[in-house]
Structure formats: structure tokens, C-alpha cells
Image (cartoon, rainbow, N blue to C red; front, side):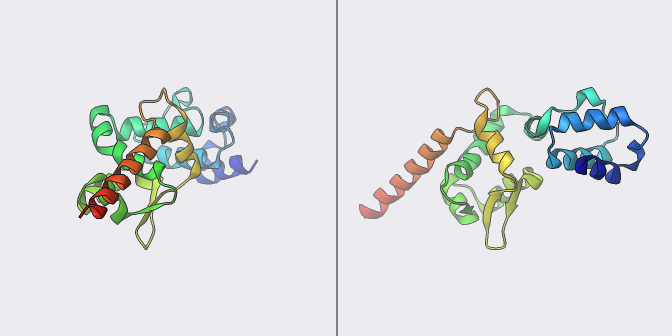
Length: 173
């Protein structure tokens, strides 16, 4: 009932469209984040999407966002995967400086990467980068069949190799 009230408050034009509202709520799988995303997307869309074209559930939303934001998988692999592996593999949220050190990019390049994620990432005032919602972190590590899957094992290995290399350089000098 809360989701339906929120949906109709954001989109009063749907009040007479009970079947459409029911279909949207079913696709949302009870996720408030899905409904919020749906309202934002629909309000910004040039064309009205057909209900049967809506992604199923929040993971479907994330997949659709990534398909649109990262259409070239080769550049996703080379530019985005190292960044996401740092975020996913770290035992605590990393700062911008730590990520720059880990993936060997300039601050300008890193900020460009972060901006591509829009509202899915958050940078705190003290420079910590973190996912805005746990469901996004869960999605990105949960589906090995997805083109956008990030392996926690590979992420941990990347960070361990970086840390080991740094330790060796610092102790052998």
C-alpha cells in the first residue's frame, strides 16, 4: 500500500490506470528503490515505456542501467572493472587516494569513472567512496552469468597483489 501511495503521489496521471499500476508494483517486487527509479526514469523519458518492457525487479533495473551506461564491454573491462574490484574487494570503504593508488589513475580520471555511476555511488566529505545501496553491491557480485559481474575472489586477489607489491617495495629499499 505504501508503494502504491508513493507511486500515485509521484505520478498522479496513473490514478485511472489500475492495471498499469498493478503491473508496475508487480515488476517492482516490493522494492521502494525500484519505484523511485521507475518514477525518475518515466518523468525523464521522451517516450512512455510499455509496461512489459520494464525490467523485472531491482536487479533488472541495475542490469538495464549498466547496459545503457557501459555499452562497450571492452572498455568496461579495462576501465571500470579494476575500479569496482577495489570497491568490492576492500574490507572497508576506500578513499579516493587509496583507489587512485590501487588502480594507478589520476584523480581526474577517477572522478570521471565515479561520475559514470551517477547515484549508485556516494563520495563522502572525507573522500570515501561507497555504494549507495547494499542491493547494488549484492547484484554486482551475485550473478556470474552477467556481463557486469565482479568476482569477490578476483577483487581480493587484486588488492592482495597490490598490497604485497607495495610491502616488498617498501621493505626492500
